[in-house]
Length: 253
Image (cartoon, rainbow, N blue to C red; front, side):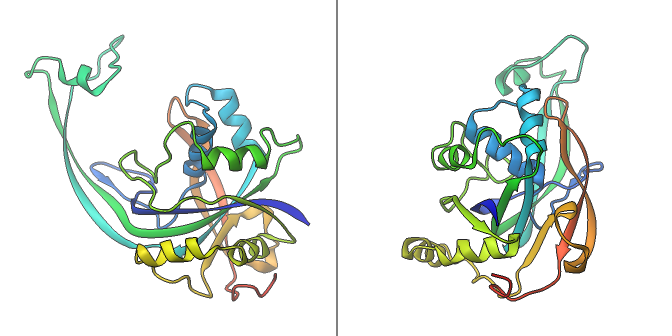
């Protein structure tokens, strides 16, 4: 048996950025590991500049996501005015950027994809050789009362449901999701109805760190660039992610 921290991630609008080239900013159909780690770090009060704490958190947690509903894709057309980059000049706020002379400002055009009405269940477990610090109890407490406001990919994308973290003990990640579902309260179920969320499918897709899943349970493996190497420099490494073979909820509970 292994301990898993399981919680809900749902938002009216969300963005899970894929590799961006040029003006098009696409989104994956599910959260990235780096985004979820960033959400947890923010909840704990760990800032992006704290590289050591960020890296320790990333190295100590395994990750899986169940796609309860991927939502629908929408495109947002952006025009943004920004000052040109210059050596030794940094802007602390957006107001500082816009305070430069109008003749210096230039316009950046972009098309940014968003997912509307997406709903996911996240599972984490201790994956490092060292004890997990902070522990799941502390992380669950932080998700209920976060230091920094959590969001779904972009700061404007607020969450629409409580994350409702719970620690469960299970034989594998699929069983952990099933145990989490069995503990849903009437309030959680009513909130899902109130927000018109699509009912969870019995064969909902589950993705997990490939090195944590037996090969016989893997349908295919995908490569994602979502391992944080430097939050300050916005640099990410590759991670192998396994799509589990379809099973009905509860088959391996």
